[in-house]
Length: 125
Image (cartoon, rainbow, N blue to C red; front, side, top):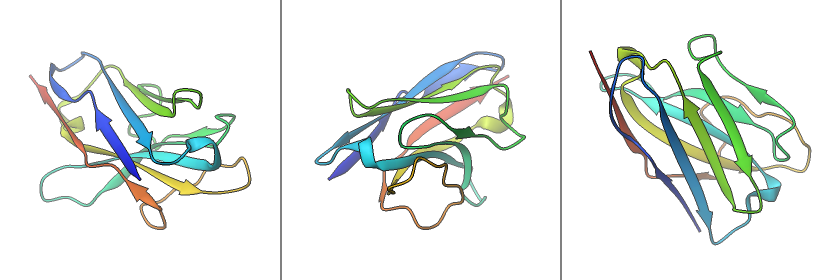
């Protein structure tokens, strides 16, 4: 059972990146998913959440309008499109999945069943 995050890299402020989170060993159909980031010396925080069928999403104010989470259950993959990147978006980005029967968004940094290994996003000026 594994979540593999990828797509991080170095980008200039104002640029875009798309992160991917591929699941293996289980199907994401029955899981709500979230993307999180953790900057050096700071706590991990959520930046995007999506329900198991993709009908609902949630973003904190810090990224709303710039980040978009989506999922392709046929490919067992979650995506995070990040636009208008800012210096403060620099962090390691993680995906996480939590089993749930209802098609609702789950938020917060605790209670997730599986975590990906993280991918580094560096935004330069």
